[in-house]
Length: 187
Image 1 (cartoon, rainbow, N blue to C red):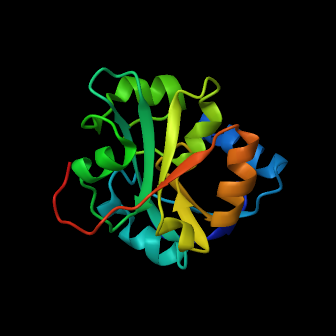
Image 2: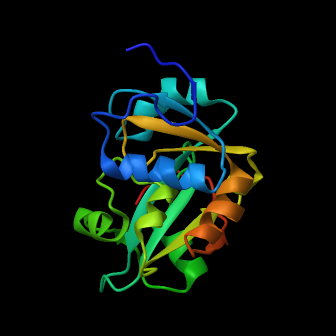
């Protein structure tokens, strides 16, 4: 598949999932411009190497849905794709017990997203504000971010400012800035 950067929503929307089309509808309604590349399913950050090259200068985001042991608090963590994540470091900053990956059933219930498609744009589906957005401070320094439109067969390049000011305001979500180190230990 030859990857090419397109401006805005797909010209032909047949064979696209309704949740993907709802994402484009909202971005268009908010007058947020975006560029899109369609591709084979990209389920991991390693699958995004070629996509990353096309979306430059966007910072491709690693998005993790986390929860506490009791599964009563849920967090969507956005960080630069190459950055390592250490549970202990984040838990300490939040003043919470150790966090772990949330079961996929919560991804679908709260964000209408399946594993491999987790994205900040899924917060448009979190009408009860069950998920708290956490953003690594380094990501906020990027001019553009790259993320999925609630499906992992497309990726978007969006202005960081549009995501954190316009989009999040429209979907009634705020965010907490966290500072994650570069340790090599994974969750």
